[in-house]
Length: 207
Image 1 (cartoon, rainbow, N blue to C red):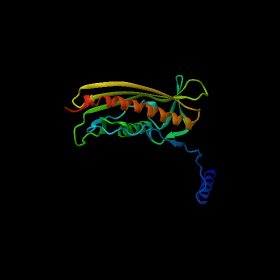
Image 2 (image 1 turned 60 degrees about the vertical axis):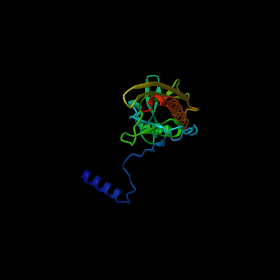
Image 3 (image 1 turned 135 degrees about the vertical axis):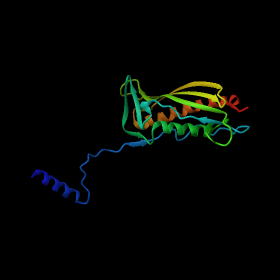
Image 4 (image 1 turned 180 degrees about the vertical axis):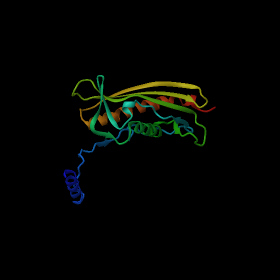
C-alpha cells in the first residue's frame, strides 16, 4: 500500500503549479573569459600586402583544455569551484591568437585553407602549460603559460621554432584576480609570439 500512496503524493506535489522540485539545488558557476582584448595598440600597416599564414588547430594539455580553471599545487591538480570559462580554454585561446594576429601583426595575416591567394607559411602551436600555480598554500598563485611555436614555409621548408614561457602573478587569491592573471599571461605570450612570427615574414614570403 505504501507505493501507491507515495505515487499519489508525488503526483499531488507535481500538480501544485510545478513549483516543487525533487532535484538538489546547486549554485550555478560564474562564467569567465580571457584574451578578449589585446592591451597593445594596433600594429602599423605593413609597407606591402601582409603574408598569409595558415594556423593549425592548437594543441592543449588534456587537463587544461576543458572549461575548468586549472590550478596546480605541487603534484596535485584541481579546478576552481564555482567558476568556469565561457567556452573550453582551447577554443578561447585559439580565438585570442586570431585576434592577436589581426590587431598586433604588421606583416602577417591568418589565412584559412582554401582562401584565395597563396599562403606563405604554416604555423603550428602547442600549449605546454596553461594553469595557475600555487607555490604555497593560501598565497596568490602565478598563472603560467608555455607555448611552443613552429613555422614552416608553404613549400615545406622549415623556418623556425620557439618556446615562449610567461608567468603572471595574481594580485590576490581570488577568482577575479586569477582570471585577470590569465588575461595578462595570455596577452604577454601572444605579444611575444606575434613579434617572433613577424620576424619570419621575409623568409615566409612566397617566391
